[in-house]
Image 1 (cartoon, rainbow, N blue to C red):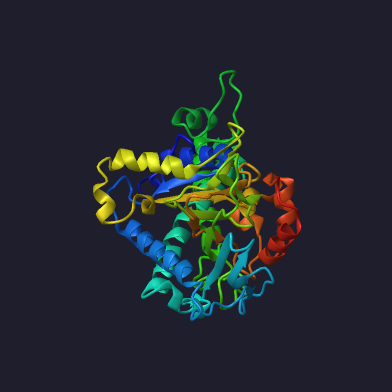
Image 2 (image 1 turned 60 degrees about the vertical axis):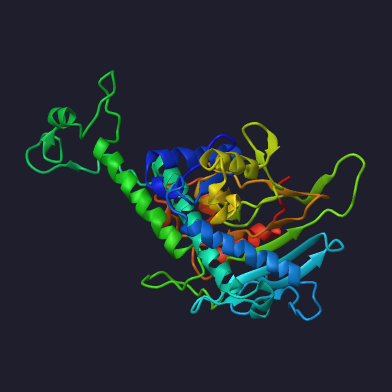
Length: 409
């Protein structure tokens, strides 16, 4: 991720995207996505700009006596004690949070008492931004899960085109082995031994892995919309399990050694992915497994922005950071990727100079759905131990079990 940035809309189904996604998530802890597709489209960036205005308005108005933001409480209609909405201020105001969720049927942002503090059209802007981030997150999970399933051979049936019809001599799709080898349906290695899976087997397994991963993103991932046209068992409730969290981090404790300090400690998220809009004030730090050091993806995004728009001509349309999203893998993606992609360890640091604002979306699982490995990730025999242990479990039970476990260092 420290040397790669992807324009996901342009390459969502290509090998370039696959290499970017897998390397960035597995080795560097995050993926930086350019919403403008290399400066070709600005609609999403403009909508993210509106979201940032609503976020700034919220925290500006939160301290006004006339604004009555409800305190953090368990959200009705979700069905989990971990699903909350409301406002919270901790550490003498150094950390302030507003947890919001979407009501499924009408897309209304909850709690509704927060709408006035966001300014005119602010709540609608938050909903639009959530939709954008959710779609990007689903794309990333689909690509990563499909690639991991394919790599594990979970949808590969060796000799699936083999036929025993006709005479006594074995054949493949009606051809002799010699004919099949010449046509590329059946392959042999340099020593003349069959490799097992034919090109057709491999091609078919790629398609099946992609289709199953797409099904997972539609049925299991909670994008805030009702699940329609599906025969899977679900009891999703009236409110989304995936929160959109507005955060303000300040550092009021001055130090002679440094003007920055860790304000939110290292942790992983119980999500498929956490999507963080790049902020104007950097402060998100991701632990890079490849270089074994902390790194700030927002600085990479800033560098890319300067390359795209050195004269900052687009500033009239939207601030530079509104074009970028930072996608971090969560604990649920670690499961569906068969441990190929570890949950990202990240933290937040804040400076005494300026507070940092953030507005991440944590894409979680739809309540009432079941982790059906064979439906979404292929053969149970090819699953690792963690994936096997989750097979048949309700997604909320998996979520609760992960919440009860200690966070990674």
